[in-house]
Length: 394
Image (cartoon, rainbow, N blue to C red; front, side, top):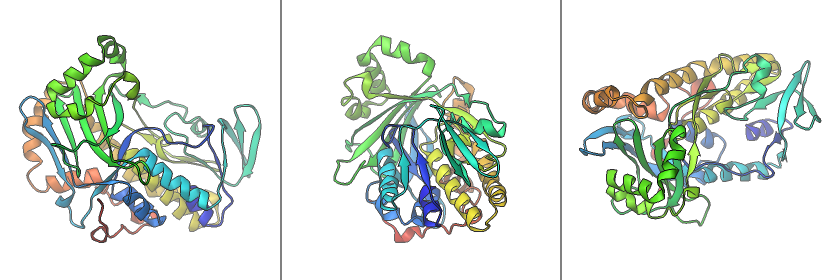
């Protein structure tokens, strides 16, 4: 967002709560949506050099080996694909670009609230004030404090399942370097391996390894011991030992918690809310990052079309409304088939959904849902989708 604003001639300051800007998290898939935004920013080649091209998502039942998820990007026209990256890679590409633009970054700053009138002033945690600003963009994540100022104080509704994540060395034997591979035990267990390329230039290739579980069960899993957990993983997916063998401590596993929240109107007086602060949902392998990139592009486009901030904010909210709501609804509907305590839903998934998914137009719809293009996200954000056949990823 700062890159777009700075290039449009605005004076921009980023307030960062960490003592120094740094990435948090493991891997994600940049979809054609997010990749198009990076292309619009002139950063596509930089991220492509680090990521791993993903052509399909494949999931199988751990017991029977039956395929229950098979989404291929080439089911759509246009040569689309995903790009799996370490979060550090995406962060690094954007951060280095911000440094090249000499964008001001103030670190170690916790923002509590804002006062908005003709302009907006931010109130820091230590009581100091920052500003005034013509516009504040809230990109502070799912637990945003600033959205309270627009009458939206609610926290995301916690979802029952989270995940253990680890970034490990890529071990390719028996794994497809251009696919997300998953194994399921009903809907209560999901194991995944995602090749994520390199976190930075010159680094070794890595994989994101994840295991779904309830945050409420973490203490019990830890209490049973690391060896017991690893044995359970390998029993369900023997080839996964290539990755579990790299884990020597629970400290290598990060626990991700998820919540669902959608602002009805992601704007206020002199305030725009983007990313997870405006809409968070169940884990969809980085869709939050793709949606946030689209938000940034849409807000930039709206601001470029008028000098009136209020009109730009209204246009931004309108531009993103249906794409966000559609994806939030689809995510909420499909997640229980893969992460829940239900016995009936995985039964339906394995027998009915897996069969229907092979019959046109289901393959095309599933591919567009994963790619984030089931509803056109580009035109209203002022974007033209990148020309994928011209782009090759390793």
